Length: 332
Ligand code: UT7
Image (cartoon, rainbow, N blue to C red):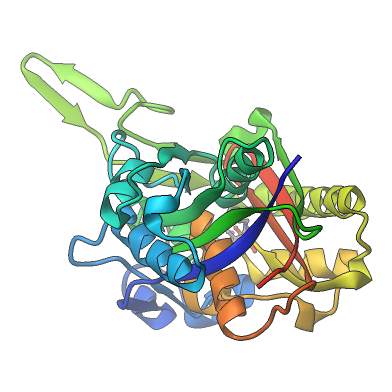
């Protein structure tokens, strides 16, 4: 069986910054509340027609530049997203065209905020079984487009962005050591979209000759989700460390999904992981769903936070409910 290793990482976040003070003018909230309850100070918002596939392409080009892999050599493009430009073609196919990955098979993976780790699992398995030699794995979201801007319980949390990694086959004893995925649909009511396909409401009202589409936005029951997140993140982290035969104290860095600084701190505390081993971007970007881990990872790499042979843990949690983790021995 082959192995997959990360050979490049990149990210893109839009230039427009929406601060907590800006949000005070939109809903009944305050910088103090948002900072204390979430750790978020500001988030990026895609403007001027910026779509998910374009942000994905910018992150992907950066990741490819860091590697020796050219877009034309990619065998697989997998995008984790819940906000593709359109239902079809997939965001991955639009991305493939933008970067010129002509021989790749391309697909989207929908797994809420776990989209990147789910996509990583698909690409890792394709490389392990010999179906692919080089793969691009992306998490990209325009959450501002599915935000209910009158709901202060959710609109203060979300942001836009994209992150990408390039994976290549290796026969060395390094790279991705474990990926574990879980889901439990019985908790789907805690975080869901009210959308054009009519999940919770009959969204298409067919009046003779008229097709009225209701807006697409996100609904969340934050408190029980918070509790479930901490439990699931701890469970999947311990399972993944066991599978990779790595102890918590051997970890060089944990890059968790950036949903709430209190969730991240609770996880680190339960694991007994020192604060300086946890990489966070939530203060600057908020929750960017599938994009949050690869954005943070690319920044950590650019900032020199990972050296060859370092043990990296990525762990996530999101709508579905879905959760997942990966243990990687760093190799660039
Ligand atoms: O990425 C996918 C996974 N996402 C998550 O796991 C998110 C998990 N949940 C959370 O992060 C937190 O539950 C939230 C940040 C969403 C909310 O924090 P909380 O500490 O659970 O607050 P709460 O919902 O219990 O609300 C506490 C109070 C309420 O007021 P009362 O009823 O005590 O008077 C809310 O109405 O805070 C109020 N509140 C706000 N106040 C100012 C809720 N949102 C806001 C706001 N600004 N934006």
